[in-house]
Image 1 (cartoon, rainbow over the protein chains, first blue to last red):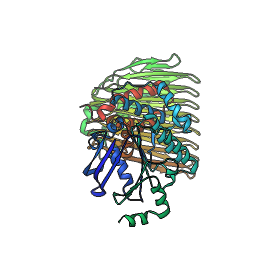
Image 2 (image 1 turned 135 degrees about the vertical axis):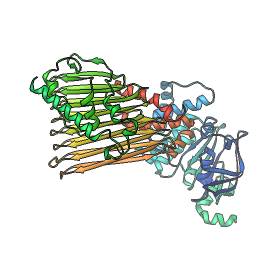
Image 3 (image 1 turned 120 degrees about the horizontal axis):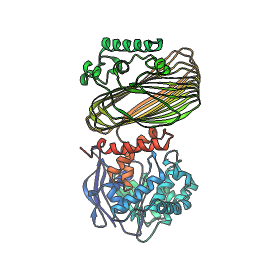
Image 4 (image 1 turned 180 degrees about the horizontal axis):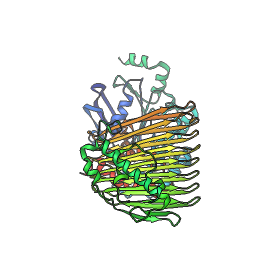
Length: 249
Length: 377
């Protein structure tokens, strides 16, 4: 589904990713772990198509297509979803209006018909219940006054609602207490399926106790320096990044 | 000739004299620094502007209506017309030269609604009197596509416990000079609410001087401006907290596209002894056009001790994080920008409690946004 080859990405003229290669198949969950500044967020942003993240070399192929040639909205319509580390607050747009606008924009781009408000509401309510997203939250302006946990739950709700093919979770565990973390992990596990691939980006092994990955990649200084199964996450937790980086050198 | 009429004649003569002495305001006059009226109109253009045509689209039965050009004026009109002191030259011009206009009075304890359309350029004078305990919703529209000078001078007297709601929508006219000059007084526990939609002209100016003259009087002003290439809009307010425990709030949100210029000047004066007064003003501008300009100038003048005054101004472009967030969720760039601009304006529009007025303003905003966003020539 996703094939990244020798990817070099510069931000503001500074190279952050320096030859990253990664292959993810449908149905798989891959974890990307790495210390601060290793390029984790850059990877998530370049996959989602954020302006200012320039691919200087290499390629990103998504279902046979050059992902980098697509605008962010086109990627979303084709099933790429990024759960952001810092979801933005948008005063003046209610959460429900935003969800409806986004869902229908994606549908329109795929040549599907718009869903009416009632239909959208029904779908949202289904997902909202399991993620403990209240009706009151849905009526509030998008993310405005939401706690850290509420924002992350709303990101996962969107993932469930949009039914992406490739979901990227950027530090979804950051700022969550253990109860919130479990709730979010359950939400993520609920959407795991043979058709869907996931890229779980995290600093800590903690989240991976609840979302068990098929593969773990260690990112350091813009490159993947080690790969392995889920046990690699435990090794990282035990040894620390510094040791793993030394071992790989 | 009775005394009231001769007093009115005297006030008109005085206004004409003020206009002759000071002439058309220009950029070296501090209050007109950002709006050089003299570049687009000379003294002759003002004094010979002719009568503005207006139509009353609706007037409730309880509201007394007087056409100022029709024969003898009743005593209350002669007493009040031109009686509120103003140092505004354009206000003086409308008093001195306008051959058209009307007066409205809402009797004690009554309420009503008036909708008026100022359909042509020229000058007009409007007098509105709300007796104690009265309320009036006054909805004023200026259509698009006017050419020439429109100068509307308005005085408003809001009595004790009386409530005045003033909604003004001035649609875009790139070849017009659009002036509205308002002077108002609000008595004890009365209120003045202004909702303005300014869509720009070659030069457009809404000037309001409002005095909170009685304990507990309130003024709440909210406005949006949506400007396309080649337009200008200036909202200048001066609120005087003349009495204690008076409140004023102001919230103006402007979107400027192309090469346009949007101005907000808001002066608050808290008079000596007007303790317990509370004033808040916020003006924000979103510059969409590379060559769009804004001047936001809040000003405070405080002579009392125990007051609360807060003001803020901010200029910016659309937030890049928000734009990316919406696009990453599948919302196309143009639609995402539109959503964010509407969200920016929403705060000011949502101040309007009346559903019809709010919906009408939204409609005007929707119509104006494509041009301001540059997707139409």
